[in-house]
Amino acid sequence: MNIKKGGGAWYPNEVWYSDAYQDLNLSGRELFHCLRTELRYSGKGKKRRFINNGELSYTETSFKKQYGYCSSTYLKARNKLIEVGFIKQTYRGGNCRGDRAKYKILVCTSLPVREERWRRYPQENWAHEIPIIKKQSIGRNTRWKKGQSGRKKKDSTLPNRDLNGNIPPNERHPSQYELPI
Image (cartoon, rainbow, N blue to C red; front, side):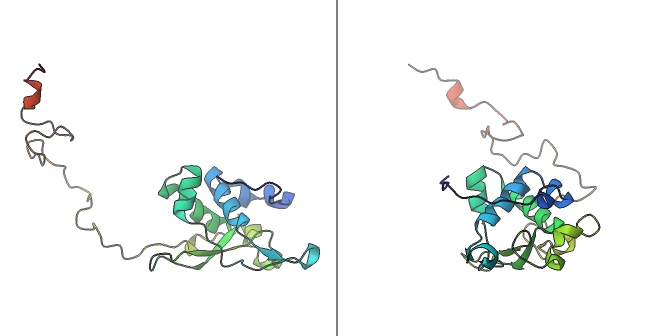
């Protein structure tokens, strides 16, 4: 992890103590901070303008490498950020190699108050905007179905001498009979 000195992001107390921020878990806060550090701006003071908001991306692999989380943790954190109104997905991504999803941050980016969704969070949420894979047909026929009984113990799919499964082999491995010389 390469951290530059002198950098940082400051949030006003209204963000820190908001219901939206308090509902985030640690992984959600870390993902939000990662996306926030991707923001670039031009100008200073009141003339500061964010030039890449809406084009932000922080990939799942980068997040996993940085924090050691799994893929589902990244997805849950991203979904929670969308639900509470901290980010909005502007582009889906995933069509080809290098095609990333892009997001817009709706907190502390000089947006009008009406566009800052997080302020209305407890009364409204944006769970309906969470991206869902609708037609995932891979493995559909082999999924566990309700009422379907499991395999019988006698129906072993393992070879007779395979020791790496849930069903024990039918006989001992021959190397256990031979003693080393």
